[in-house]
Amino acid sequence: MAQGPEKPMFDDVGHWFEGFLQPGVLIELGALALCAGLAWLVVFGLRRALRLHEGDRRSILFGRDVVDGVLFPLTLLGLGYAARSLLLLFLPIAAFKVAIPALIALVVIRIGAKVLQVAFPQSAWVRPIERTISWVGWAAMVLWVTGLLPLLLKDLEDITWKVGGSTLSVRTVIEGFVTAAAVLIVALWISSAIESRLLRSATGSSLSVRKALSNATRAMLLFLGLIFALSAVGIDLTALSVLGGAVGVGIGFGLQKLASNYVSGFVILAERSVRIGDNVRVDNFEGRITDITGRYTVIRSGVGRESIVPNEMLITSRVENLSLADPRVWHSTVVSVGYDSDVDLVMQLLAEAALVSPRVLRDPAPSVALSAFGADGLEFTVGFWINDPENGLLGLRSQINLAILRALRANGIDIPYPQRVVHWADGQAPRPPRRRRGSPGWSERSKGDSPCGGWGLGLAYNP
Image 1: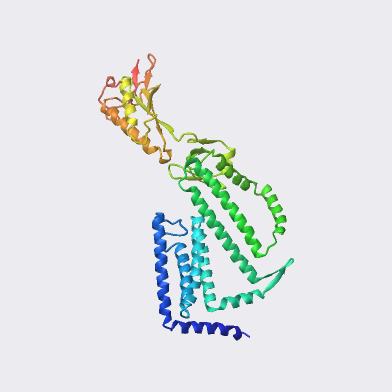
Image 2: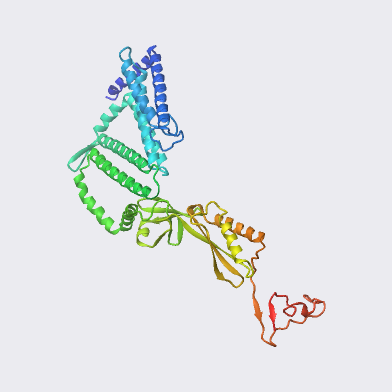
């Protein structure tokens, strides 16, 4: 019984080995090489015509180079089928019986790997799934070429069990999983293409709207793909109504925060109250919004720290959007000069020093104001506008302060040190402690040499 079905398989393998020894195999190999060259030229020409960069890692069809995407093996498979049909008119084929299944497996593996790379570019679990798809694809190809695949499927079809009112077999379950995986891959491919098209050259408010549309499109396509996949497996979808009610109750109680974050994410993207690229301050954390997902928003500060903020917080709490209506942001620095300084000259020098950086806007121009009469000198506030706060402020403020310092020193304007005046009541000025000659701290200088009776504290003594 066991040797009966194996004999045709070994006969087929034997015929293929005999066919590989025939002179016609050289013609087949030459035809395969010609097909590969034509496929390379077609893909290379399309890449040049579409002006795609050779290092485009997000391209599903082209990949990183000409032969790394899906289009090359797909074109090679089509040309291989055409060459196989043409050669069948003149000679028996042997090499194409192995080449065609190998090309089909290569197309399936490339599609699965490239779609996952584009749909989930930063996920760590993508690499193991890619390897699994490769192993399964090549194993199926070997089983197909050797003739074991039909026999294996026939044996798996005999293993059945009853689930409710339907009968399932191992073959049905495997085919259902393969169909479900194929449908989900196609859904991810379509959603990735739509997302790439929507987000191309989008900035500001349009980027947020397109991001919302791409997220909604991907969710809808994945949902439809899941429904179709469950139907392909043979699961009665009417039985999921009870499960849907249970999931609704779970969302209402245990998953309400998670559901609230997802709903808040779509509200944020629809209302455009905060957008990708805006500079915001949330919960004493200030930075630039780099991404808005369905559940959270990523805010990156000027020092490189990133904060993951749940979308619900952006809806229910106070958010300062520094660039909602206008991307320009005002900053300032404070300078103190002596009371005897020329005020007009100081204001002119400060205004010129603020323009030392090209990041400072010329319209509106920097402003200088006498903001306070300080204890040590006149305090001036230098205000300036910038439109790129995401590039940081410390370096810009340091550059302006250095220019101010050089300008004041070049014009002899004094930046005063802190000064304090101490008034002593008549007869109550403290006396310095008497020290013996030769003791530590003893000096030959008389008390009249110091305004504070020889203490040397730098205080003004007014008896």
